Length: 346
Image: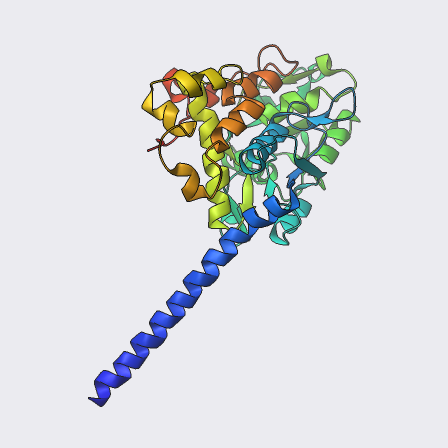
């Protein structure tokens, strides 16, 4: 009898502990959404000075791919894509600000790695750009391949995946190189532009963007090699599972919208007249997805109406009619041979 009582007490204590943890967890994950809605503004961290991603337009307003991802989340959560406050931060500063709750989401192009994902207080949401590390050199250097760069001097960001990838590649291929490190990618790019090194290296899409900020972009070429895989994903604070769900499914909605032919221009028509069950579920005509996210039925509609689908965002800031003119490659929809796919809305 005593043994039963002892076990009952243990079970009761354990159950109570689990219940308390569950209640605490539910309250914790709801806080971020509640705080954003109460403030009426989404605080978004971006790294500035990267054309196509977060760069001031003629009026001084930050525009670009990273900004659009912020605006999509704001539209879904607040019903207005313009209710965004962007804070310009470099990598270590933005990580600390996210952990401290000073910003709600980071959308800049930080690579999803094991050491960043585990034990740093941050959660990645979903890959929004598939990239890989490349190398930029001056035409006057006279090289056409990475294999010709043994002994060259590289401008790199200290502590970045770029620095580690370069070291791994050159060690593996028994080549020497000299590394000159700087506090962040922008500082490394500026040093290269000033002639302090032979090579500048970062993600390949980033090279095309940074090159536009140089004194004479036409004097620099991107070498053909890609030495790494760089899955780029926005981040939220670790433990905020509900908030991560929101960001994850907002981004999925942008990708699914492109696949289904839902655009910023036709989203109203699609919502009122499409008989495609997936379209109806995404746009809130049927299903109970909004309730599970604790958002309005128009959450995905608002995001698409605010910024367009994934392909529209890409074309507007990175596509063939922009100065960056990036080839989508792996960032094509899966139906076009790429890796962009959304889990089903069902």
